[in-house]
Image 1 (cartoon, rainbow over the protein chains, first blue to last red):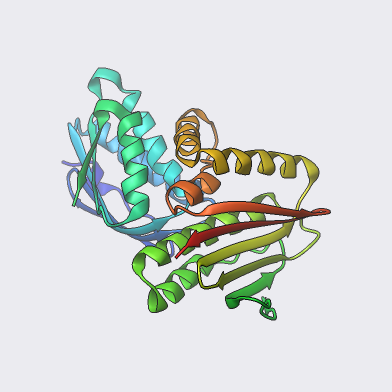
Image 2: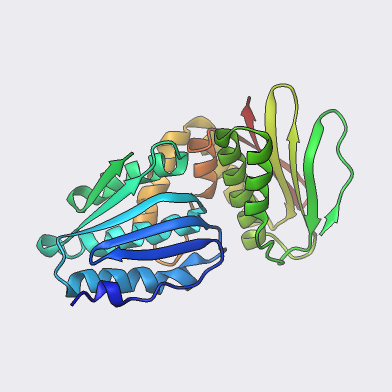
Length: 125
Length: 157
């Protein structure tokens, strides 16, 4: 039984979250809320907690259709990486599937990869 | 929102003013769609990013005493996003210092700010201006007149 698959995605204008498998999330649209942490932070935390509960080794986050995020939304991904890193030896890998043609994805995820060390992997298509 | 008269000397594509403190919901999406209809995806990305981040800063840190004015202009060589708002002296000093650092070394400041955001508590990343310079490859300038500050981001076309 996958805990992650039971999580309900929040309804927020402009962005869609689809849990496409026991360890896969697809995000599409844009995140331009002034305070996305308020609306989306608990969802990201629930995904992290579920990944830990399910004993996952890897979570795939497909952001190729997430065309724009404001800097406050980048914080959501920074926090997720931070929580995962804090697990130490038991950490799962956050694998981001990105679109190399989208500038914010190219730059932001490259830095996240370098800050996250072994817990972050990037698949740029 | 009210539409303002275009400035002379360059072509004004969009110019909008609204009450400080009012969330311009959907404005970034509007700018993105407007740009993608007329220009390349790359240019649309730059302008959307600069518009979103500059407005966010104006709303978050600006004073409520004056309206916020956004404008998107173009001339032969540049595309220009500017936001004017009232603010307070300590914020002006912080802003001036950050813009000065970004004018000197945008990539280094971007990386430093990103690294700081990992350690910073709260929900803000404080990456907005650094993203404009590094990700959107736009140059930032400040114009301060009394308590009014105009932050301009421009990109050579």
